[in-house]
Length: 110
Image (tube, rainbow, N blue to C red; front, side, top):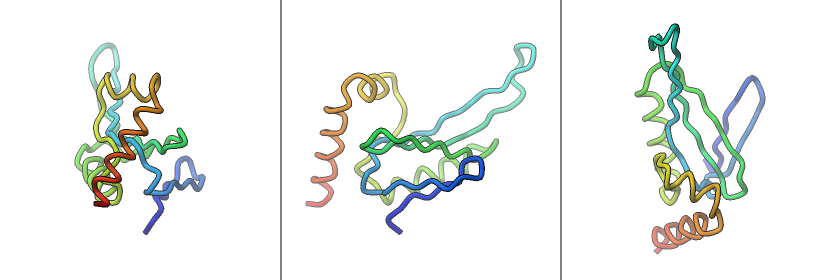
């Protein structure tokens, strides 16, 4: 109950919920001759050590949303959603990004 366990390409991977820092849905659009022919939905999770988990859910958005919600319930302090601002903070100012995550964790703990 304390670990996020996933199985990318047949490998066993895990990350502790308490270490989660950022969580969002990633959508890959597949095109053929410029026409969208499908989408693949994945959930991206990053921990405070910089490890990344990419959990491909398939071609439906709802299961990805449900997975994000389930993980978010276990790690409500993690930043949620993708934005250019969050991405820049993660890449260029990770120390402050993680400080904000810790602050959120402390507020939740009371």
